[in-house]
Length: 339
Image 1 (cartoon, helix red, strand yellow):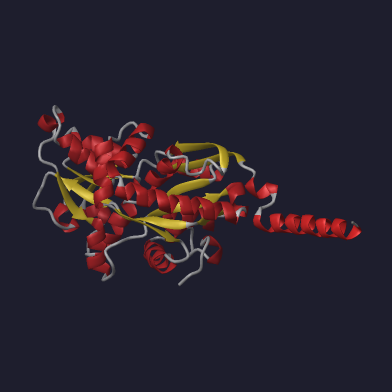
Image 2 (tube, helix red, strand yellow; image 1 turned 180 degrees about the vertical axis):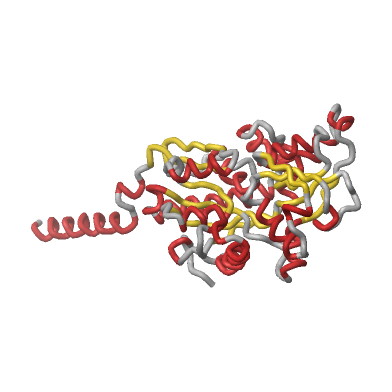
């Protein structure tokens, strides 16, 4: 019998050891009390909203919130105040904040092509065709104003002198000016482009703002002028605050983000319905339209580093303050390895 007891004890010990190997410690599976995601009313936020609506992170946190930032000032308040864990933001803003001492890492780039001119002039093909004309421009000194200035300069134009730029708070504000015929041209980011075109076809807006056209594709201009691929690393997800210390959480959120982006690309209208519930000014149809035309793809920040550094280099050459006075160092690029 003593031998049986010894054998039983060994079996129990082995079972306990095996359980320890296959089951993570309790702390690793314990859910956070709250996780806060934030982003603008733009394509980069679409997967974040789907992640919440679909319950993709319900095992990660007891409560998950999505906060919309409407302009760069609100974004900076969120970042500086540590009021969110993961924030969708323009890549240059992430670089600027990082270089100014804010603790954050850029985890991915997902927005590569959402900037378009929308115009009543169906003959306009390049930015040069808008010389001397009034253009509604969102986010002064931030994306997309920065990209417009770079592309204008590259073809020998001065954005401040050769165009009449009318600055507004957001792409949706620029869209409203356009559809109410207070301007004839606007630089918009998806889904505001699709929203403007959808509104233009509806009564009574169609009477007020007839014949709007999707005009110059700024990504095509970028490729043409810089002799590169027709895409720009415009926006992605940054991790900030306490979540910076938890790489497992970051990897989990990024995996969910990638899956949600793919789901939205395959289920555009259903995704649009989810987004429209969270952002009042958008419609499901416009969000679906924007998903069909936008260049969106999850690329880890480390893998996107060559394109980011080229983009940041162009910004630095034009105005070092746009990226916080220098190119961000290795610590800026989170998760993964550079190619």
